[in-house]
Image 1 (tube, one colour):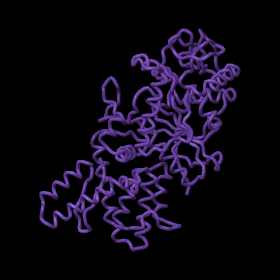
Image 2 (tube, helix red, strand yellow):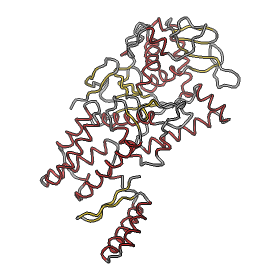
Image 3 (cartoon, one colour):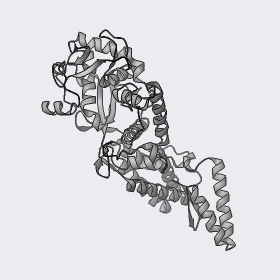
Image 4 (cartoon, helix red, strand yellow):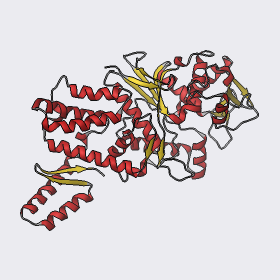
Length: 459
């Protein structure tokens, strides 16, 4: 089956054709680690994780690189405000970020470079840009000359006025052009810095990703991922400096072949903002909901569409997962994922929805359809459908087989359910209700059915 993804640069859905089918290479802009990750960060991580998992259905090797930004003005300011050394701050929040993403079943990238490990590569890139007459030194700063790159603005489609308005950088008298952006800036004595031909300083944020992606993956690579909010200026600037370091006015596809952007996340219809006080942190949400519930919520809308985050979407996802788990438990097919089925047309139909630009709403629709088909299906088809559901949910990162806790916990739950069943047979309904409440306190929901008592663990 062919894989298609929407390419933000060409603004159309394109068939994915890797540069080298023996090694598909993907880069995603990772977090700036000075605070807890919010749901916008999580959406990018979850969506890109699903893209990587989907590509691995067709390609034996997919190399996924996602960086950690551990040097940035926001980090410096947070370090000063909290009176914590920068290394301690970035190590703390890098660890928390990875733990939070792991709770959402996001696999660790194959490589997770830290910006401070690639200063030498950044300096080499700046020197090359100056040699190619695409950058200049002014007032101890090195800046990229936007007028030197004829393709500037093609990713975002912004006009000249829109580029100036959206650059979000202070207009400085040392710039030739308001759109020019910093490659290297001087550092004060109380700020981190590295020696350079232009004095002690530190890199501009945009330069970091260009250096890390080029070094870790080599250019051109296949897919560059990120949130749509990074399209301008960050990704526009990445293209400009990366291509110009190859040679002046290199075509953008000499840096990367496909651009993959996920949509904004709002909260109750409003932009998430610290000034409004509506930032939704993954760290906090995980205290109330299982990671699978959060992941399903993030995948419930098509990745390119805006996602309106609120308590309702979490409750709906919780109910959806509970219904799926209970239905699978009710089906009572013991073979589960261990079936030796070489060709499964039901699973192929499911995978086709993800091969079509990660159409997760359609994928979840197929799972619901399969659940409804189970009771009427023949034995052979029932086995295939059951396998398709389990493998499909596994691909989505919502693994049913790993949803029931460890064996010790399972034994405890089963023992409590058996005690409750005995109490009900003896018409000791007070004790039965007490056991139900005890199970509820450890996040176990139970349902009495003709097939017996079914249980599900979901926060």
